[in-house]
Image (cartoon, rainbow, N blue to C red; front, side, top):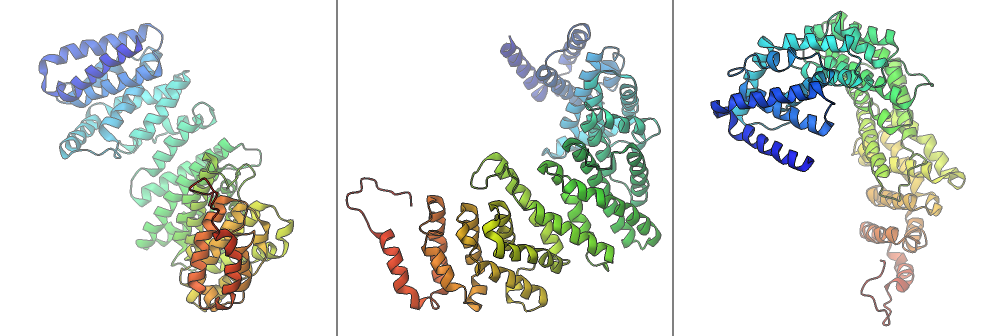
Length: 531
C-alpha cells in the first residue's frame, strides 16, 4: 500500500542522509535500486506526482553524495542515455529540480561543510555534465509533445540559469523556444519565470543592458509586453512580471552607468526604461490585486531612481498619474467588506501596505503631488459624503490617517506650503460631519484620525466640541457595534488625556452622557457585558 511504500522510502532517505556517503559497500545496491526505478517508469504508466517527487528527492541525495568523486558520470549513466521514454524525461527534470533544492537553493541554511561540498558539486557540474544537460533542455523544448515536460524544463532553466554559463540558455536556438512557450497556456507561467530568471542573472551592466535590450525587442515583437483592454488578468499578470523584471534590471543598469559617468549608455537605458512605464501603469491599474502587485516594486524602484536627479516635466506627469492611480486603487473593491477578517480582506489590506509604501516613496520626492491629488478627494468627501458609498469614504479617510507615513512625519510641526496644505486636509475631515455616516469602518478610522493628530488639534481647537459630541453619541460610545464601542472607549480616553485642559467646560456634559454607561445592574447574571 501507499503508506507502507512511503515508510520504506523514509528508511531509504534516512540511510542516504546519514550513512550512504561513508558506505562504499552500499553503492552498488543503491545503483541497482535506481536502475530498477528508471526501468519501471520507462515500461509502465507514470507514477503519481507525489511518488515521483519523493523518488526525485532520493535520487538528488545520491547525486549529492556520489558526484563527482564516486560517480562522475552520474547524469550520463542514470539519465542522458535513457531519455527515449517521456516518463523518464519528466522524472529527469524532477530530479534536476530536487538537485537544485539539495545543492543550490540559497534560501536553505547550510553548514560550512555542506556549503563547501555544494560549491564543489556545482563546479564539477559545469565541467562534467551541464553542457549535455542544457542540450537536452533544447531538445525537450523543440521536440517534446509532453506539456508537463516542457513546463518542468522551463522551471529547471529558471533555477539553473543563475549559476551556469549564460550562453547555454541565451543563444539563437534556446531563446526563441522559451519565448514561444509564452503563447502556450500550459507552459506560459513557467516561460515567464525562466525569462525573468535570465534577466535577473548577475552580470556587468554593459552585458545586462545588451541582454535586456535584445529580450525586450523580442518580447515586444511577440506582444508579451503590451497590455490591451481585451487581455484577461492572467495575460496582464504575465506582462506585469516581465515588465517588472525588465524595469528593475534597467534601473540597476542606469545606476551603474550613472556611477561610471557613462552618459551615452545611461541615455539609451533611460529611453528603454521609459518605454516600460505606460504598460506598467496599465498592469498596476488592473482590477485583480495579484496582477496589480506584479509591478509595484518596479514602480517603487523607479521613483527611488528619480531622487537626486532633476525632474523633467515628463517625470512629474508620470508621478502625478501614478499617484492618481494609487489613490483610486486605495478604495476597497465591491467584494471586500473591511468589517470582516476574511482571507480576501486580509489580502486587500496587505495590498494597501504596498500602496502606502509606494506613496511614501513618492512622498520623499514630491509630497506636493500627493497633496494635490488628495485635495479634491477631501473636498468631495466633506461636501458630498451623504451621497457617497462607504468604500470611497473609507479610502479617503485611510489615506488621511496615513499622511504621517506618506509625507514627512514632521509635517505637523512644519510651516512650509505642503505641510500647511496637508494639515488643512486633516482639519477639513475632522471639522466635517462624515462620522454621521455611521459605517463601522468609516467611524473607526475617523476616531483614529482624531487621536493620531492630537498635536494638530491642540493647536487648532475649533473642532474639539463637535469631536467630543461625536465620541459621546451614536457615532462613538453609543454606536450599535460593540466592536467599535470597545475601540472608541480606548480612543476617547486618549482624546480626553490629550485635550483635558481644553475640555474643562464640558466636564458636566461628559459625565451626564457617560452616567448611563457606567451604571451597574445589580440583577445582571453575567460577569461581562459586550463592552
